[in-house]
Amino acid sequence: MSSTVGQGQQAELTARTYLEQQGLQFVAQNQRYRFGEIDLIMRDQQTWVFVEVKFRSSTQFGGALTALSAAQISRIRKAAQQYIQTHKINAPCRFDMVAINTTDIQWLQGCF
Image (tube, rainbow, N blue to C red; front, side, top):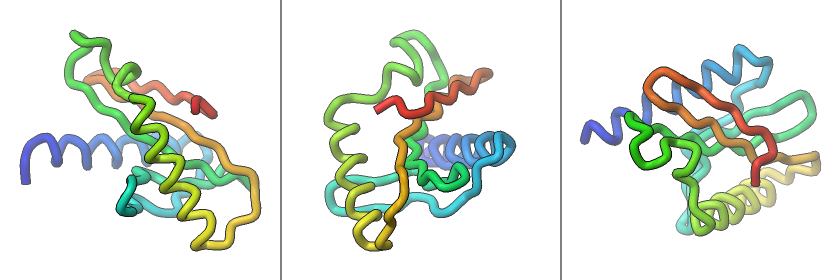
Protein backbone atom coordinates (compact mmCIF):
# COMPACT_ATOMS: atom_id res chain seq x y z
CA MET A 1 0.00 0.00 0.00
CA SER A 2 1.40 3.36 -0.97
CA SER A 3 1.76 6.10 1.60
CA THR A 4 -0.73 8.20 -0.39
CA VAL A 5 -3.39 5.48 -0.06
CA GLY A 6 -2.62 5.18 3.65
CA GLN A 7 -2.90 8.94 4.08
CA GLY A 8 -6.20 8.92 2.21
CA GLN A 9 -7.64 6.19 4.40
CA GLN A 10 -6.45 7.98 7.52
CA ALA A 11 -8.01 11.24 6.27
CA GLU A 12 -11.33 9.46 5.68
CA LEU A 13 -11.25 8.02 9.20
CA THR A 14 -10.45 11.48 10.60
CA ALA A 15 -13.32 12.99 8.60
CA ARG A 16 -15.75 10.27 9.68
CA THR A 17 -14.83 10.73 13.34
CA TYR A 18 -15.14 14.51 13.03
CA LEU A 19 -18.59 14.28 11.37
CA GLU A 20 -19.81 11.78 13.97
CA GLN A 21 -18.74 14.25 16.67
CA GLN A 22 -20.89 16.86 14.87
CA GLY A 23 -23.91 14.55 15.17
CA LEU A 24 -23.94 12.81 11.80
CA GLN A 25 -24.49 9.06 11.57
CA PHE A 26 -22.14 6.87 9.52
CA VAL A 27 -23.76 4.80 6.75
CA ALA A 28 -21.04 3.62 4.33
CA GLN A 29 -17.53 4.27 3.10
CA ASN A 30 -15.74 3.98 -0.26
CA GLN A 31 -18.74 3.19 -2.45
CA ARG A 32 -17.17 2.57 -5.84
CA TYR A 33 -18.83 2.57 -9.23
CA ARG A 34 -17.22 2.42 -12.66
CA PHE A 35 -17.67 6.17 -13.08
CA GLY A 36 -16.84 7.43 -9.59
CA GLU A 37 -16.48 6.88 -5.88
CA ILE A 38 -18.11 8.29 -2.77
CA ASP A 39 -15.70 8.57 0.17
CA LEU A 40 -18.29 8.71 2.96
CA ILE A 41 -22.06 8.44 3.17
CA MET A 42 -23.55 9.87 6.33
CA ARG A 43 -26.98 10.83 7.64
CA ASP A 44 -27.76 14.24 9.12
CA GLN A 45 -31.13 13.41 10.65
CA GLN A 46 -33.33 12.73 7.58
CA THR A 47 -30.80 14.09 5.05
CA TRP A 48 -28.39 11.76 3.25
CA VAL A 49 -24.96 13.34 3.03
CA PHE A 50 -22.43 12.34 0.37
CA VAL A 51 -18.99 13.44 1.54
CA GLU A 52 -15.84 13.99 -0.47
CA VAL A 53 -12.71 13.93 1.70
CA LYS A 54 -9.62 15.80 0.54
CA PHE A 55 -6.29 15.68 2.33
CA ARG A 56 -3.23 17.75 1.60
CA SER A 57 -0.08 17.74 3.69
CA SER A 58 0.82 21.17 2.35
CA THR A 59 -1.07 24.33 1.47
CA GLN A 60 1.62 25.22 -1.08
CA PHE A 61 -0.73 24.72 -4.05
CA GLY A 62 -3.92 25.91 -2.36
CA GLY A 63 -4.42 23.04 0.05
CA ALA A 64 -7.29 20.60 0.29
CA LEU A 65 -10.03 23.16 -0.31
CA THR A 66 -8.90 23.76 -3.88
CA ALA A 67 -8.37 20.09 -4.71
CA LEU A 68 -11.87 19.34 -6.04
CA SER A 69 -12.26 19.65 -9.81
CA ALA A 70 -15.45 19.99 -11.86
CA ALA A 71 -14.80 16.53 -13.33
CA GLN A 72 -14.55 15.02 -9.83
CA ILE A 73 -17.79 16.72 -8.80
CA SER A 74 -19.51 15.25 -11.84
CA ARG A 75 -18.23 11.73 -11.03
CA ILE A 76 -19.29 12.02 -7.38
CA ARG A 77 -22.77 13.19 -8.41
CA LYS A 78 -23.13 10.22 -10.81
CA ALA A 79 -21.98 7.79 -8.12
CA ALA A 80 -24.42 9.31 -5.61
CA GLN A 81 -27.24 9.04 -8.15
CA GLN A 82 -26.44 5.35 -8.60
CA TYR A 83 -26.34 4.80 -4.83
CA ILE A 84 -29.70 6.59 -4.39
CA GLN A 85 -31.33 4.46 -7.12
CA THR A 86 -29.81 1.19 -5.90
CA HIS A 87 -30.91 1.80 -2.29
CA LYS A 88 -34.27 3.32 -3.27
CA ILE A 89 -33.64 6.46 -1.23
CA ASN A 90 -36.44 9.03 -1.28
CA ALA A 91 -35.13 11.70 1.07
CA PRO A 92 -33.24 14.99 0.91
CA CYS A 93 -29.58 14.67 -0.12
CA ARG A 94 -26.61 16.97 0.24
CA PHE A 95 -23.01 17.03 -1.00
CA ASP A 96 -20.39 18.03 1.55
CA MET A 97 -16.63 18.24 1.52
CA VAL A 98 -14.23 17.73 4.38
CA ALA A 99 -10.89 19.36 3.64
CA ILE A 100 -8.03 18.24 5.85
CA ASN A 101 -4.65 19.92 5.96
CA THR A 102 -2.07 18.64 8.41
CA THR A 103 -3.50 20.54 11.39
CA ASP A 104 -6.85 21.83 10.17
CA ILE A 105 -10.26 20.33 9.32
CA GLN A 106 -12.80 22.32 7.35
CA TRP A 107 -16.33 21.04 6.73
CA LEU A 108 -18.22 22.61 3.84
CA GLN A 109 -21.89 21.68 3.80
CA GLY A 110 -23.87 21.63 0.56
CA CYS A 111 -20.87 22.88 -1.39
CA PHE A 112 -21.68 21.27 -4.74
